[in-house]
Amino acid sequence: MKINWLTSTLVGKNQAGVINMKNIDPQMKDQDLIDHLESNGDYRIIKKFKDQTHYNDDDGSDKKIAIFLDTETTGTDVAKDEIIELGMVAFEYNHTTGKIFKILETFNELEEPTVEISEEASEINGITMEMVKGHKIKDNEVKDFISSSAIILAHNAKFDRHFIEKRFPFFENTSWGCSIKDVSWYENGLKSRSLEFLAYKFGYFFEAHRADKDCMASIHLLSKMLPETKLLVLEDLLINARKKSNRIAAKGAPFAIKDNLRDRGYKWNAEAKYWFIDVSEEDTLSEKNWLSSEHEVEGDIICSIDAKSRYSKRG
Image (cartoon, rainbow, N blue to C red; front, side, top):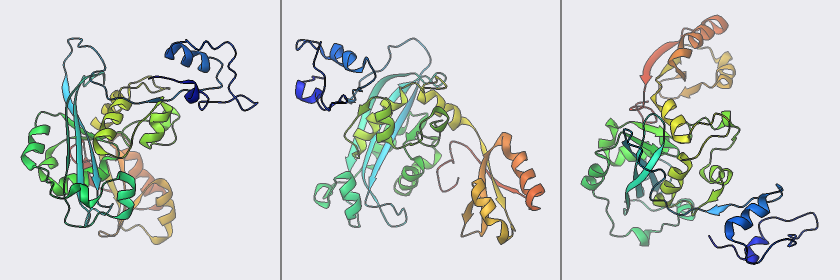
């Protein structure tokens, strides 16, 4: 990164509205300049993210392969919209510590949809019908790319998994993790879970909303350490992704308690006509007891959820 004096005047300002240039040597090296500006807490330098090839040297530990995946689509309705770009990045990691070692391969392909790209989607991802015309993602290449992976990761896995399994059904037998839902962001003082916000909090920014760029920026986020728990982001994600949960249905719950259920986190299944909630295995009994003691409703466990079904239509 090269910092010039014009750029540095945009980083932060003192009470007078200008950067105090006193004691700044024009020949100062970039990192020394950053350290100088940040030394009193008045300024913070956010670096532009550059693709990494590796994060840690090989330490001889057992390693697995994860794939970070991102899709760009014609819109947000899984029933009618389609994938127009698929990005995947395979990387090597330790499944116990969450330490990331090296980036292995990248995959990024466009696909011409059978429906028009919505104006809203095109404004976000910058992809037009002209760009995707004649392009087709080859199923066998996608299948080969994921064949050695232990887990598929995405930032908002529910969105990506629904679209992916609709287009590529062979993803149904894979384990998934989510860098939104499976990371303890709130517990670590981070109240927004958007990728751009989290990147900013960890000191970098990137060109967002193209599939391959989002994947690389997300892997970079996984390499960081959470501020409170001091766990690597990927370590925390893997711990939570491995946990099993149960879906409890409050069948027959009276209309009068709907607000109580909603406030507690229950969701309405319009097709099956019941309220439900997903809770961890250890919290299942207490949740059933709450329904029974507070509302005289019998809670039914309708399914168990693990990494292979979570974020899919089956979970």
